[in-house]
Image 1 (cartoon, rainbow, N blue to C red):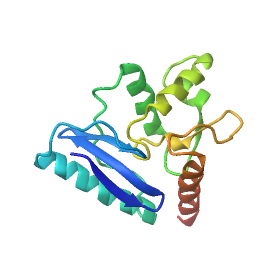
Image 2: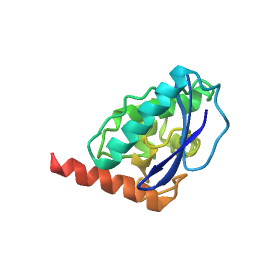
Image 3: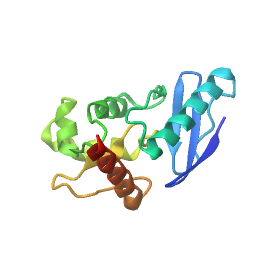
Image 4: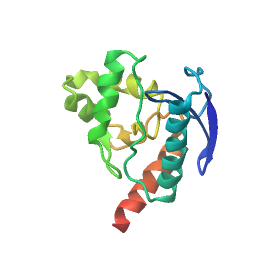
Length: 158
């Protein structure tokens, strides 16, 4: 059951299984496994949490994420993003090191970020180049900057 949710950064495409969110992207993806009550619950929670995030009142998503169909390599890297909190950033190399990879694995980490099916909830926008520069983002660098600015602004308020 795929839905489109309008946000301040444009429409976001959402999809889910009964286990969790499988898509939060800037373009449509493949359809999930139906539209039972658990899928509807996951999608409703995702929409509410996205609205609160963009309003600046949510710092940590609780909507479950289902990455079961993604390669273990990508899951390992995406799960490593859990340690990068709201308003914080990390470089590709630092993220590689934090999940036990060598210094030469930064490019592979970038590949996992590019394949992240649940942007924002799994916050790949918080990953920067080694020199702190904005690099690659499926939604475009303007959206990445907007998300980082939102988090940075709200972090200063507390």
